[in-house]
Image (cartoon, rainbow, N blue to C red; front, side, top):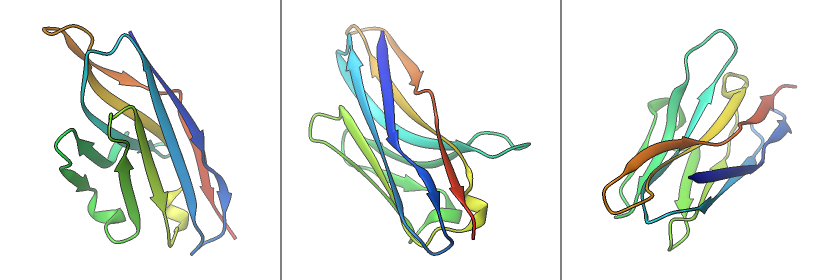
Length: 120
């Protein structure tokens, strides 16, 4: 089992900045990728940014140039730096990890979510 614990988030004004962190622990054989998703009220959960073990990074078009995802060398930590925040970034942000717990078994794991609110 893999546990993801998020920290950071909170409230910011438009054009402000916030940062999120996520720590993975548990029975981890290998982490393939880590990502941040978000879900706004009344909307579906959407991918914000992802990073794989090889360093490949993807961003949602809505956050390109404003958000930066990064990881620790061991892939047990992932970060999201959010700059130039907009009210539409308001959502619950979830950390996601695709990890092998044995050499043959992988699954997707989720954190509990952290609220980000952007408002003047």
